[in-house]
View 1: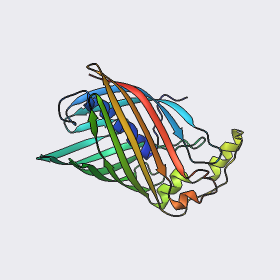
View 2 (view 1 turned 120 degrees about the vertical axis):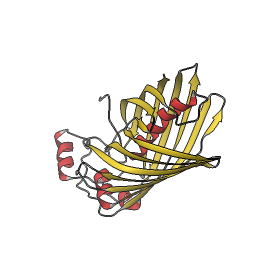
View 3 (view 1 turned 90 degrees about the vertical axis):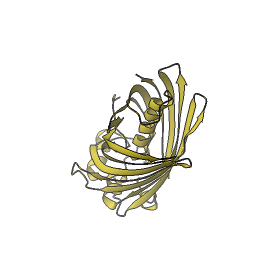
Length: 257
């Protein structure tokens, strides 16, 4: 079992929201002020491939913000925001680690991207573009996201909805099966060996997540997030795909300094 395993976009975004919630839930200061928070979580990742089982990984949770610079678990970058009354507008330039889910498919890559967001009393709306900067697959992904934060005493709950558009190269990299991956499954004596199954079209996944953070004392928080993504039609039609949904659960604790 690896101590740190970055995962693909929806799970990584959920983990970032989770530790960020811990960092801000314990402070009366506005969200986004300078902070340092660290924690440890457990990830249950359910890949959509035939014969795949739920994988369990311990993961470190990190949230740091100093001025414009920030780190949120698998992402780091520069952020700026401008507030006008009850509305805040911001932008971020970032790099983020990515890894494919599913056994025998691990491959670490790094995306570079930009994100714009608007925070209002009705919730937070954001849009982003990210592109593989390692040259591994050269794909591009567009993400639209909406979240709404609810505070009930020491409990913070944040439901969110997300739309991921992937070009053909991104969809194939994340959900296609190559000859090398099939050979690895055979070498590892898997009970189910997937066929070579490329994804030949762009795809759109519709997903969402539910994040909570419960404050204990002055520094500790208990955290959790459940996320799921309904796969686009070109992905669902692949003979390697056994489920229409990809899902994950993260639970952990964090300490704010």
